[in-house]
View (cartoon, one colour):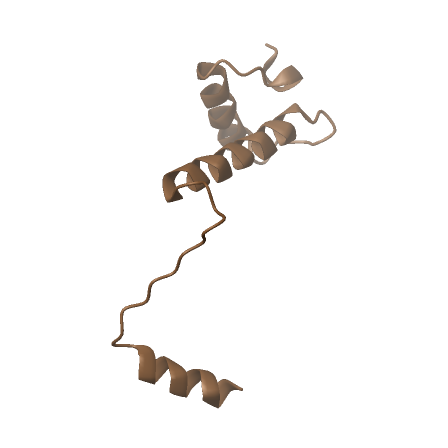
Amino acid sequence: MELAVSLLSKLLENHQISVSFPQLDLTAPEMLESLSYQALCQIHKILLDDTLSDPECFHKIEHIVRIFEHLGADCGNRHDF
């Protein structure tokens, strides 16, 4: 199979490729925005988790917490001082 992929790659490398998704209603920027929001939600969930310890990464976590606070998002007890 590896040989077939190599041969096809060589044959197609100078041809324009067009990909379409007829059922997809989102634009590329909208998809990226959606993924970014999902990542922010996951980071926010971690920041709200009081069971995690953060002594080694305190400054990095502090920076992330300040960004969330600037955006108006509460980060729980991690920044309650």
